[in-house]
Image (cartoon, rainbow, N blue to C red; front, side, top):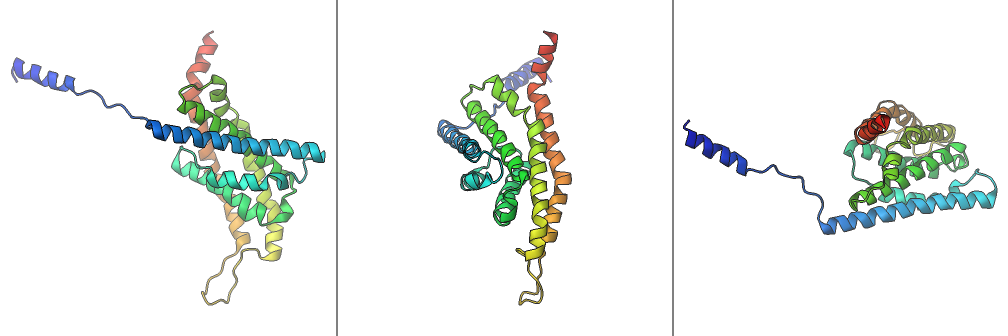
Length: 234
């Protein structure tokens, strides 16, 4: 190849600029900001409801009754931009736990485990939706970023423990009443044992929860790692 041809080739390559990843447009950003502000407010309503109910009752037993309706509402709306599989599992497991377990088996609503997962969810989501809101506005306080990638270390195991203990507490009532179970014979020639299904749901936490937890640990190292290293040098 001649020098002129090489020069032309280099110039051509030089003219091709690397493509930059485009963010959401102004309209999409405005919608996402409003959505995340509303979701933050929704979880704040739940937090305030828990505190007010506790102050009125003088006990944390039975607080679920005071926040059941707003909790169901925000859970139905609560899909956030993240890993599709992991977020899908997290959202669906929460909807399932509130509707198919806690709402359906009234006897477990006064269990301490219910307050455990509701508290963990509430703190987690207030932090998360605040994080998304300020990120979209390109004005993210370090405290919120730190909380987003630190509080989960305690809150995730706390929430999962509450979820599993609540499902476990519901098992005797489900077995006794045959809730949502379908027995043979029937015209569809189909049977379903909800009691066994709940046990399978509990077992599914074994492979799925570590994926979610260690995904967040990797994200924490990626996002906060450089800051932590800098603070050590200081």
